[in-house]
Image 1 (cartoon, rainbow, N blue to C red):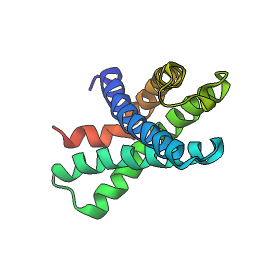
Image 2: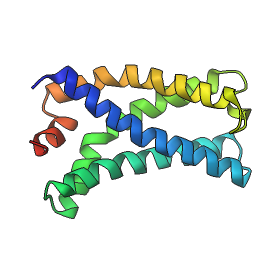
Image 3: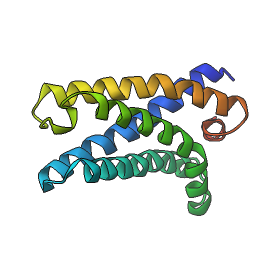
Length: 145
């Protein structure tokens, strides 16, 4: 198994779930007038939810029962999403004005894109390390073949 290719694929999967959660969380938090801490908490919670959901759906399509699919999603994605969210939010918090930028602002979308890009770069080697040890998305990857 080409662990770098699998790690990139796993991290793109993670990035997709995180991006959906981040954007939806920020949109909802902005709409509801929430502050930074609540916005970040919602975005992170939704990033985990959508990251797990994407894996869960794929594993279920492979014929795995619901309970096992939930356990596999947690085992495959928790560390990857955690690393991605830590890096992503740390960068967003350090970009001046990013947390106060409106959804219509180029600063908001630019900072989010840069933050997710950095998070992807940091998370790929984490996923490679886990896959090389038969953990994380290595288990999920085997189900797709």
